[in-house]
Image (tube, rainbow, N blue to C red):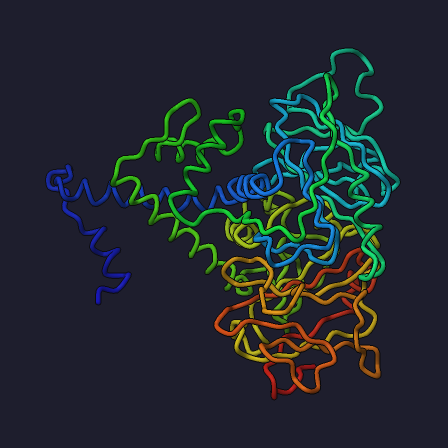
Length: 495
């Protein structure tokens, strides 16, 4: 069997007699270049295609347009295929095209926590208030601070028609015409979700100018929907459709040049040759597996681990002696150099979506903090046929709620175990506490006899986990609280 090293040696050793390639050399290197560019384009464009897939998948199930909001009124269940959803809040998701609506008004009620991103998953630039630039956030972490407010989403470059027209709004600017909203409504009891539903259904979107279509809140919890991005040639067709439909993006001109070399360019038909189609399909399959590999090994990335003796990773990377500052910004750029952390960005958007300052800010009691793990305490990948336990110390550092959620390693959607409604437990569930108020949660295909708290896994399926702390408290930032790792059944619990 030819090793990977031999393959690269073969490429490097292709003949160039007299400085010109032979026909075979030219064909080999041209295919190789096309394939490499396509793999890199896949990794780079994951944020945009992820957004397109969510819009199209939810649109096919519930309808399209700025006035349609998918509301997961019974919380989000495994029948909705979407990456790492939070199934312990009420989600509201909507998509709009500013090229059609023009400036779009958001009437936000009190108590929601939401965000608005463009279709490259860049948080929109909002107002500068008291020296703070708001990026993407609406509601609790936004400029209205959860009291409710009026927002205006405008295409980048637009100006008001008359003086003072925008004065009554928090103005956010979008570099893409397509935008999406992710809103979270909260409740205090899993037996009564109505407060969360009411807050989401209190949101109203309408154009600043012209007639408005009445809002339609489509209840989505019990209707299956596939909002996952493609892993094959379809990825590039969806990317091309987005490029054709939106404005010319001025960010990252080199990578847009790579897309053009693949045949994806605004105003040009995307019609790859049969060989091009074959290579694009292979590149998409390879790119997806590459991103999944980066995610599974993200613990080895510099700055990725929250704690040196745990397996939990931080999406935006964080120094272990300073939880107050992320090492990456809202566009996954290194705060010191401004350069994109390409591995962190691929990890984020192959398994997750959406970003705003509230998801990485360090304000006690505001926003949220996330810890992600793919491995058990021994460093082995988590699998559905094994049984694990995890110990969470008493007094979780969250003012709103905490949760532990399991996700399928392949789809990054909720683990879909027979008879299990949600693949999560949260502080509002009927949790069984230990004597010291710590919490032990068991994970496995069958419920252990001793398990007071259990989440089911599926044999033969890998899984990973997310801990969320909403409204993180001082104890989190001061590193006083540290969750355990997943420990295989029968092993000793690490200290």
